[in-house]
Length: 76
Image (tube, rainbow, N blue to C red; front, top):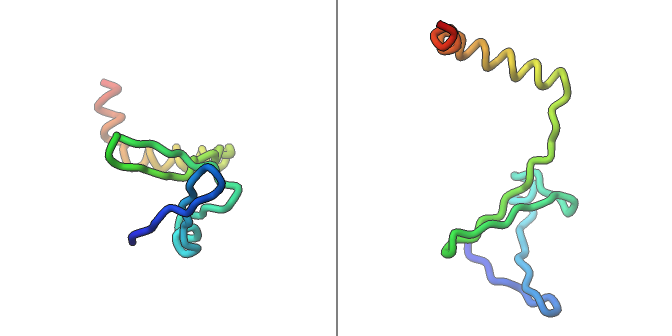
């Protein structure tokens, strides 16, 4: 997809199509991180989601289950 910037006062705006916003779960309230390596511009949603206790426990259990042998070797 090729886009052009749109003039907006003394700034420029990038219009992001609705299907892309929906795919990435971005709304007008989503904080975005904008970074560059000097050649490429990267725009990514900031993950401000804080895990609740149940989510954390579920993630913890999944990691322990899938990496049980690795943790066992590290413990010795």
